[in-house]
Amino acid sequence: MMWVAEASAAVTPIDSCPETLAKPGETYVVTADLTASGTCFTIAADRITIDFKGHDLVGDGSGVGVTDDGIARLLTTVKNGAIGGFETGIDLAASTRSQVLNMEVFGNAGDGILVGTKSLVKTCFVQFNDGDGVSVGDFAQVQDCLVLQNGAGGIVGASHVLITGVASLINLGSGITTGTFGTVTFSLSDANGLDGINVDARSLVNSNFADNNGENGIVVACPSSVTNNEAVANGGLDYVIPPGCLSRNNK
Figure 1 (cartoon, rainbow, N blue to C red):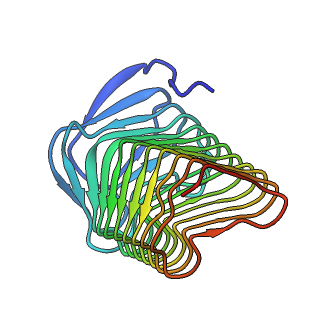
Figure 2 (figure 1 turned 180 degrees about the vertical axis):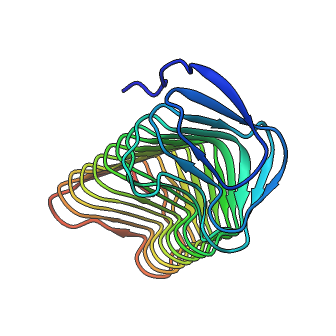
């Protein structure tokens, strides 16, 4: 699966909110730290990139930092900055093949990052949001992220998702959940309020740590494969693996 967006046509500096970004193929470069009352950036065309260049965007508790406004867009990229203090940090749930890269998303009244199908959330730090930290649609990927102390689930995936190399810690809900055909590998899901890892049928859970969670460590629906994991000191059962699943080399 290819995650590289098409080459951008031009570069436009932006230094204020609100802005509707409507030039297809454009790269918008944030040139200053910004504050917003309500929604800041609305994506209104395909193949748009917002490069924060290390800048912060802080809201007043309402609106969305970056949104597709519920209209499907293609190949949106949001990267290299921080968004906090909105109702939702980034909401691209209606869109396809979005990328959220190297972003800190923190302190929002609802969810941190929402992306739609075939999207990628990578190297992000998502903390202190009152809803889910990261929520992704079908065939999406979450890689190399730290998701910490959110008020609902840490990482919530639909079907056919890949979650790898993440740490999901101290969230009030479950640390990592997926729908059917989920893959969760090389991840740490510790000290969450509910389950550490909970996946639906036909999933793979391999080489993870799920310790000290309030309910169960690793929960799967069958058929699924659960291999080479560690789950200890959870409040319920360390493993909930019904008959019909493959379970091998777990501690």
